Structure formats: structure tokens, C-alpha cells
Image (tube, rainbow, N blue to C red):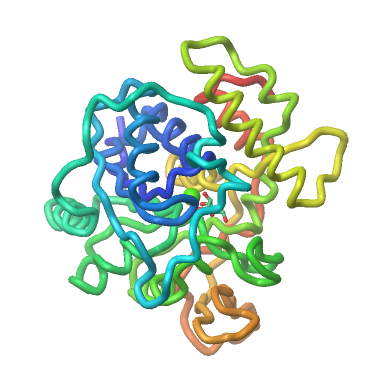
Length: 316
Ligand code: RIB
Ligand code: CA
């Protein structure tokens, strides 16, 4: 049997981050060696608390959690987004009080230590601002060639953004960090809005969630998130839905055939008045630079939904 993939998730937990964590720890081929936290959907303390709470919910208190950045590299943080993820970041659904704390080691040193100890083996799955990953790469640029791959949820290649006409939230939230990551030389898979906005969980599917100790928590958290999508996105079809952004990045490590991929040179706009945070993809026939990223351009959504359903317990 092929050995399991060593993965580190970098999260700003967040409803879809919570789903991504659950999917990851319920994927037999993924060995989640740790989870690092970042500001983004919520502040880093809340992201850390939610990550620990979700791991307790999943009965995976063996997975250590490391606290990361509280603000972007150069900018001020714009604050949380309670209208999308609730006041507590988990759609205002409650989980029991925590029974353990995060580790004392920082997110940056943990990532650095793991990649150094296991060269060529560790896949990073950042589904938050790229700040922690940029911090590691700035501290030690050789990490880029010791990583197996970075499979990020972030960017919008050939589709509109979600925090502006062009920018996706994880890139927009710290464009300078994303710029460092794309220019690092690390092998990158970009799982952006082109595919995550097609990876939809509907209210009807959520209603089929099988009864478990915590299914009420999941129903409440995801219902909040779906309601936010109803308010903020044009919803086609006869059923409301939310996008499963972060779970798709995890799925692409477990099964890279879920998306069609094309290699491009991707840069990040850090200055534009209207375009800061845009992922600029050079799709010309003869681009100026060699590709630095494998960009997901389409997704087999039914197969991805089945992958999620198998891990979260709903019917498709
Ligand atoms: O744009 C979607 C991304 O921003 C997701 O990772 C979501 O959790 C937020 O971080
Ligand atoms: Ca996220």
C-alpha cells in the first residue's frame, strides 16, 4: 500500500475550514501531522479555539494545533466576517468547552521543523491567508524545495473574485504573503474560486445528514453559512447552497483527479487600487515566464460531493 500523505492544514476556522478539517481527519490516506492557525474569517485566537473544538468533536485530540499569525505581513487586518461565519466563526453553533490547549511551539517553527525532518514528504494545505506559509519561506527559503507540494485554497484565475471584482479572500487578506508563496519556487496547486464555487453543498443535501452525536452542530453551522450565501451570492437553481472551498483543497490532496489542472505562471497584484489581491494568470500562448503553479480550472463536482458525503455523512 502506498504510504499515507503527511499533511499540515493551515486554517482560519471558519465553517468551511471546519468541514475541511473533518474531511481531512476522516481520509484514511491523509496523515494530518498538525494544524496551524491564522487570522482571517476570525481572529487567530478564535481560529485556534475553533480548530481545537472541531478536533475534539472529531475525537482526534492526538492532532496538535499551533498558533500562527495574527495579522498580515505588512497591512492591518480588516477584522472578522461574522455575517458569513457567525460571531463565533462556526455559524454560532456551539461545541463543548475545550479540554486541551494549543502547543507552545509557533506555527512557523512547527512547519519548518516538520518539512526539515521529512524532506520531500510534507504537503501544506493552506486554506487561510498565506501569512504563515510566507513566514516560513522568508525564514528559510530552502523550505520551498523540501516541500512535497503546497495545495492552497486561494485565488481566482478566470472567474470573478469574492471580496471584490478580482480578488479572492485568502489572497486579498494578505497579498504580500501570497506573492512570496507564488514566487518561492515551491510546487503549488491553486484550488481557487474557478472550482470551489462549483463545489456546492445544498440545503437539501445538508438535511440528509445522518444522525450522530454532533450532527446538530453541523446542521446549525452549515445552515448559517448557506444563509450567508443566500444573502451574498446570486443563487441559481431551486435549492440554496454554499461553496465548499476549503474541503476541495483537502480533496485535491487525497484525489488529484477531481479537478482538471493546467500549468500557468501566476502572479499576485499587491499595489492595484482596484485589483490588490488579484491572482494574475498569464494564459497567453507564449507566456513570459515558466509556469509556477498548477491551476485547477474545472472540477468533477458530483464526484467531489460524493467524497465529502462519505466523510461528513450526508446523501448526494
Ligand atoms: O474565499 C474563500 C476562503 O476564504 C475560504 O478559505 C474561507 O474559509 C475564507 O478563508
Ligand atoms: Ca478558510
